[in-house]
Every structure is written in C-alpha cells, then in structure tokens.
Length: 301
Ligand SMILES: [Zn+2]
Image (cartoon, rainbow, N blue to C red; front, top):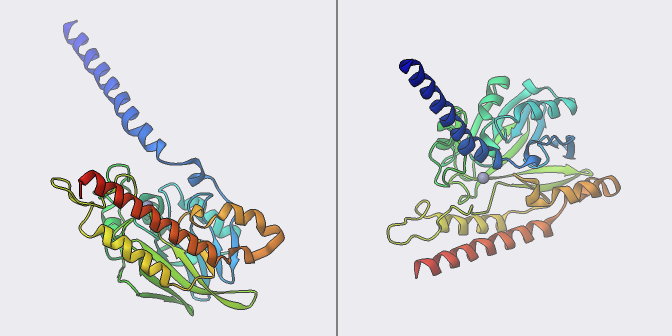
C-alpha cells in the first residue's frame, strides 16, 4: 500500500508539474502570437510579378519569374500551409518556389523556413548575422526568451549587404538594416505598375523590442556591441533607398489594412506611398532615439 501510495503521489506531482509547465510556457507562447498573425488573408497582386501571400499580420511576398518563383518570408511554424494555399489560389505552383528569402530571423518570419524548404526544395538565402540564427533555430537570441526558438534550417547562401539575388530576369537587392536583428534585411526590386517601372522597398524591421538594451551600463552590456550604431545606420540606409511601392515584413509597417480598403475604388496605385515610407523612417528613428535617451537617463550617462 505504501508503495502504491508513493507511486500515486509521484504521478500526481508529475501531473501538477506538467500543468505548471503548461501554464508558464504554453500560455506565454500563446500570448505572443496575435490572432491576426494566423488569420488567413485573400492573396492579391501588388504590382506586375509581385504578390502578397501572407496572413493579416505577417507579410509574405511571392515574386514570379519565368524560371520559378521567389518567396520572401516563411512566417510562423504553422504558416506554410496557409502560404501554400495562397500561392495556389493565385494559380501558381508551390513547387516552383526556387528561392526563399527572409526579412529577419525572428520566429514570426523564419520559423516556417525548414518546412517551406522541405516541401519545395527552395534554396534558402539569409543575411550574415541572421543566417547563424536560422541555422540554430534562434536558440539564444539577444532579444531574450520572448523570441521563440524554431526548427533550424540550412542556409544555402549567406548574404552580405548589397548582394543581389537573381532569378528569371528579376533582381532583388539585400540591404542590411540591422538592429532589430543582426542580419535584418530590407529587400528592394523594381516592379511595373500600370506599365511603369517603380522602385519597391520591403522593409525588414526597424524597431527595438522592450527587452533590447541599446545603452551599456556597468554590469549591463548592450544587447550586442554596436546595436545603437546599427540602428542609426539602418535609418541612414532606409533614407537612401528610392521608394515608390512601400511594403514591409508586417502589414502595420505600411498601413496595409487601410490601403486594402481603398484598393477596390483606387486600384493598385494605393501601394505607391513614398510619403508613408518617409513617415515610417522618421517615426521609427524618433522611437529609437527616445529609447536611447531613456536608457541613458537610467544609466546616468
Ligand atoms: Zn522581429
């Protein structure tokens, strides 16, 4: 009886332990995934050979070429079936995805990469600094435990700032816009809208998470050496990019919801928004400067 009682006690302790673990990790994990990140959105054409195949909150883009297609962003671990359905709904073949690119190596843009590569055989190309995160499934992100680990994926080509990705006559240029992640990437290309070539900017990310330490103080090093300088360089880079069609890794960067509502009456031209692009840069830079000033105040600098 005593043995039986101790086994039951053991099992009860294990069950309570599992419930506690679920409460701590399960709920925390769920809390980080906003509903719009997993809410399907009808895919649509933005311009020429450039299509939106992401969810309401996580942007994925398909660039179609005669030699196969380029997908930008694989999103969450649960996203690939949704992206695949969107690609098919537009009339394209999922297996024609030849290259996979990312905006950043955080889980909301990269967690589905291993699955996309497995299903399509696409070559994964990631900026130096983020490539290491993707290959290890972002196990030790400087942003802390709020950034969830994911299935690692092999990176076929590590990109440097200014590198070009070419397929079927399309050229995408990778701009290192680091700070949000060390290899955060803003993609540019040219797409025709109403027959006219327009510069496209797909902003990779420009914000500091609340866990980021931009200012070092004794005993508390910066999130990574040079993070503040990276952010400053990022805004310089973004300001220097010609932009007509303004896009980004999240719809909220470029006010996608409002533009989608205007689309039925105004057409594709809603995506032309150089003023919105300038505004995003100015507001993003102000937010970083504010964070730096606040952290300097705390540090007594
Ligand atoms: Zn991120």
